[in-house]
Amino acid sequence: MVKVAKFGGSSVASAEQFKKVKNIVGLDDARRFVVVSAVGKANKEDNKVTDLLYLCYAHTKYNINFDNIFKMIEDKFIGIKEELGLNFDIEGELAKLKSEIGKGIDEEYLVSRGEYLTGLLMAEYLDYHFVDAKDLIFYNYQGEIDFPKTQKAFDKIVREYDRVLIPGFYGSLPNGEVKIMTRGGGDVSGAIIANIANAKVYENWTDVSGILMADPRIISNPHEIKVISYSELRELSYMGASVLHEEAIFPVRDKDIPIQIKNTNAPHVEGTIISDNKQIGDKQIVTGIAGKKDFSIITIKKHHMANEVGLIARTLKIFEDFNVSIEHIPSGIDSFSVVVETSNIRPFIYELVAKIKSVIKPDEINVTHDISLIATVGENMKNSKGLSGRLFKALGEAGVNIALISQTNDEINIIVGVHNSDYEKTINTIYQEFK
Ligand code: ASP
Image (tube, rainbow, N blue to C red; front, side):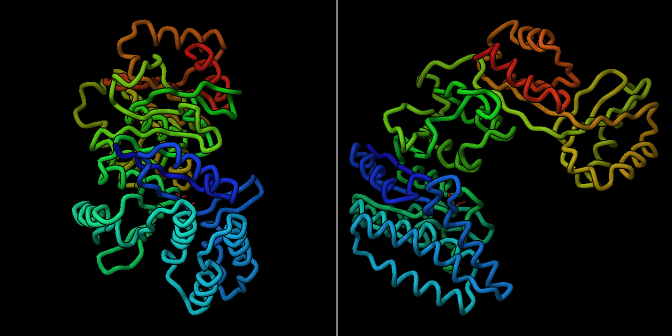
């Protein structure tokens, strides 16, 4: 059995965290492939190496001395090396990098050095074979992962080495140049490796004991979700719950590999399993609640609209022409609404409304701002009768005025729109009802 264990930045933020990683890896022989992020924040005031590297680059661009920032990076790496008594010549690597920066360096290559150097230290500490991600994770020129090429390289490596450490967050283009992923991309690297290794599970080690049912800044000590499906996670992430890089789902979903979110600081806690396998565990009716503030609702009323073919399409075309992405389109008989993020229409709101008026000739058009959307997510909702009744009753009793309701046919979520000032209250009410 093979497990891929990916450790995020906070899990490798200090020598003490490195020790925890070694302990975790040693507890299970199946953890043959380890992926690491760059040294992250050891505490709230600390800085991530990745951020510091971006900052170095910004300084060189404007010809500003970056010695102080680079020193922070050096201190972190050298501190870890010394405390763990490692031999790797990190001082030499850092000196080389510093002189490369001075001569002008590619930004993506520079930023990728965070995971590269962290990986080299961790490989020595765990006694794993280090594989540079540029020799394993291959992109094509369209910016997509070249899976056959990556698989071939992987198969060759495992014929020779049993235990391998790979830095996350980057790979290489066909011409050999380093290409980085978007922020938090180490999660994606881990998922790609889980795919090509046909792993039994992809463990994602972080600093929380799983995905929470609601935002802890709103609900104190919310329950942890035990099992969540890939689609439910996508809904919750889209609505603002941030746990895993969005793109980390696809490579593992393809092969039905569960992702397990685990806490490096509390390794015995089960954590959250992300999987579509219904056998894995019992799920609650409501899996999670998430929301986002600051939407606008544009409501268009026109008598006998139902008989006018193409009216909604023409309206949506106007939004498309303004390059505005649409969130929801709730509709009635003689009216329909378009829900968008306020920031996406703010610069040209009057032009947009004027255009709708001239093309659609509505009887009435209203725009409401300061709307929050709150999603109650759970695949089991579709099998449970009376659930929306409970939800709306609870909100009614709490005195929350609902401006909009949206539910898709797959019934994986119910979205309510409320005034921004009711955002916290709405989440709290739904949580208390379904926790
Ligand atoms: N180090 C990168 C970042 O801070 C990637 C990662 O941590 O996954 O975004």
